[in-house]
Structure formats: structure tokens, C-alpha cells
Amino acid sequence: MEKLLLIPGPSPVHPRILQSLAEPTVSHVSPEMASDLTTALENLKKIVFCERGEPFIIAGAGTLAMEIALLNLAAKGDKVLVLSQGYFGDRMGQICESFGIGHDLVRSRWGSAVVPEELEKKIERKKYDIVVSTHVDTGTGACAPVEEYAKILKGKGILYIVDGVCATGGIEERMDDWSIDVVFTAAQKCFGAPPGLAIAVFSERAMAKRKGLPSIPAYYSDILRWLPIMKDPFKYFSTPCVNEIRSLSEATKIVLEEGLEARFARHRRTARAIRAALAALGFTFYTEEAFFADTLSVVNYPAGIEDKTFRTKLSQNGVVVAGGLAETAGKLFRMGHMGNLSTEQIIFALEALERTLGSLGYKLALGAGLKAAKTILE
Ligand code: PMP
Image (cartoon, rainbow, N blue to C red; front, side, top):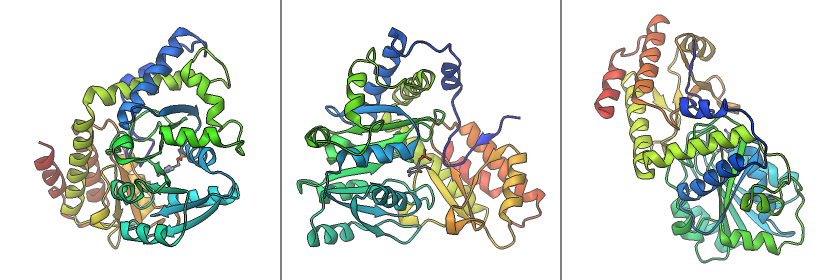
């Protein structure tokens, strides 16, 4: 039985995207590949509302995109401020450390995000060259106020990098309007393509900074080595993953066919419906309500529900959710609801959840969840 993958990435892959992967592999310098790459790049810029920046699609995962963003912008001696609301913000700090990039890490309570006033205070007290923030932390389910951070940073001569791995294509990110310098993501989250691609869009300002750096401590991750290929896919630097790029091109077409506003609204509605269902069943959330994300929910186990037993049974019922990361392991489950999820898939998942809870003898308000979700979805 094919299982519905509701972990916070990889998300379910739409049949059109799967089909595109199964087409024969073509030469990496062929007209077919050039057309797929160019389409994906052009569509990406539309998805992050960036008219004049440079998009990059490079084989790898989200963590490579994190490195690409940092290494291509940080000059020797630059100071980076990392706003971390959890696991992946902390990872940004670790990447800075690995490359000897001077940085300060501001950490929020897990389940919330750094408040904008904290960012204001930080940049008043010390000169920073780059600020990095995670849009949605996949470990804690907290969504950061990216637009407000951007407003604070605008005009201050500080480059702003957004980790959109769990947001881009599902939650609004307006690079030009909000003055964001890099948005990066990966294929397997809100685009609903399989894992394997690191994606980053650099603003004009970000490109100018990279071009002004004499060298960076990277070879494969150096965007200036990739720029000629992104401009002219008949050129060679390192063999791109042809089938994956075709699948991303298809995924971005699906995003634009749905329409960005409609897609963001659908993600909002889906999140509301799933959380209404879980609340009606008696679950509470790990994430503070003010920081709820449209792309995933992080759900506390009530007393008596054992993590492994619950997730194994739910998986036998056709739905896969993720456990907690780091210190939250065993205490909660994480349910992704991003990408191309249909109403039928959401209802299937909630039915499976109720069946699982019932079969394990948990005394939650069975039946109430589906009803609560349907009033929002219909
Ligand atoms: N940033 C965020 C917000 C993420 O959710 C993830 C992956 N879950 C990453 C970075 C790292 O991506 P990857 O696992 O594809 O390397």
C-alpha cells in the first residue's frame, strides 16, 4: 500500500511530478534539459516575487542551500546574526562555526520565534553584515515574522537571508517588496518534488556582494561557477541531475497553475482544518498559537499515548507522520501539510488518525476531528 507521507518533508509527490521523473534521462547539455532548467528558474523567481535576482538550482539538499547562502555572502571578518527558533536556526550557527564565520546566535524559546524588538536591539548595539532567519522551523513548527524582520533591516546595509526550506511556495515570501537578499529552499517541501535539489534565489544586491568577494571557501557551492550554467544550460560545470530538474520544473508549473495567492490561502485553510481536527480530538500543540505555521503542526501527546506505538499503527493505517527532534523526541509528533495535498488526502489522513486512536483504545473525542475539519475544508 502506498502510504501518505505527512512528515514535514519530503511531502507527497504529485503524480504529474512522479511521471516527469520517469521520462528517459537526457543529456545534461541538451535542448530538453535547457528548457526544463530555464522554466524552473524563471518560475522560481515568480514564486519568491523576485524580478531581477539570480536563481540557482543545484544537486543537493536544503543543508547545501544553507551553505550556499552563507558562503557566497560572508566576506572575511563579516559578522552574521542568526535568529534561531529551533533546530535549523541552530544548524545555521553550526555552519558559521564550521567555516569560521563570526556570528551571534539569538535563540527564542522553542515553539516561538525571536520577536522583532529583539532584532532591533541587536542591530542597534552591534554592527552586523548579514542576518539569517528561518521562516518555519520544522523541528518546532514555529513560523517567524519574516516580513517584520525585513522591515527592520531595510535600508540598514545588512543583507538578509531567509531559510524558506519549510515555507517557500506555501507561505508568501516577497523578495523585492520586503527587501530579502536570499531565499533558499529544497525541492522536497512546499514544491512537493522528491528530495535532491538545493534551491536559492539571490537578489541583485546579494549578487553584487558575491561578485565583490575575491574568493570564498567553497568550490561546488560557489554560485559564480554555476551562474554561467543557469544563464546558458548548454554550458558545463558539474553534471546536473537532469530528471530531478525536470521534476522541479513540473512542480513549479503546478504551483503557478494553482496561482500563488490561491496556493498560500489553501495552505492556510489546510493548516486551520488539520489543527481544528486535532484540537477537537483533544490534542494540544507544542507551538505557541501566535507562531503557528501553515506548513506543519507539532502536536503534543496526551498522557498515555506512546510515540512509537502510535506512529507505527498510524503508518499501518496508511499515514506517516514524524516524531520529535532532539529534546522533543518521544513527546510529540510532527505532521506536515505542505505542497500539493488534496482535500481527499487530508480527509483520508484524519480518518486514519481517528481509526488509529480508536484501535489503540485512547479515549479521545473520536468523530469530532473529521467533522471540525470538514466545516473548514468545504
Ligand atoms: N532548514 C529547514 C527549515 C528545514 O526544515 C530543513 C530540513 N527539514 C533544512 C533546513 C535542511 O534541509 P535538508 O534536510 O534537505 O538538508
